[in-house]
Length: 132
Image (cartoon, rainbow, N blue to C red; front, top):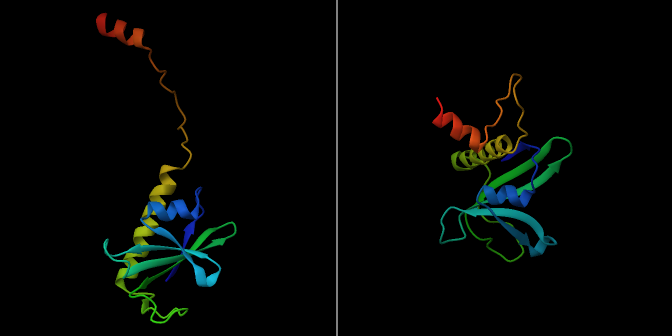
């Protein structure tokens, strides 16, 4: 399953870490970087597996699938992967939700028009408390 995420102000590695993924390198493909998150804490498979590509000006494209088992033969990619289905769709939505939250929390804050309340100092607060 492929989907797009808006451009964010952090690295792919950091975004995937926030989503619970670990960075992995494929020694058979010039240490190509991808990210994986296991469904079971004590086992490496089954796992969600992500490849990320930059889309100039727009953000990033996420290619998500689920590896059910380790590749059967050395140097092959046959791993009984699922590229769609309910689990993969739910994981994609989870990543989108985390990304949206990440974007909103790190967005620049703008003040509304109006009068800004001046911050009171310690002594002024004390005097206002003591003198009604």
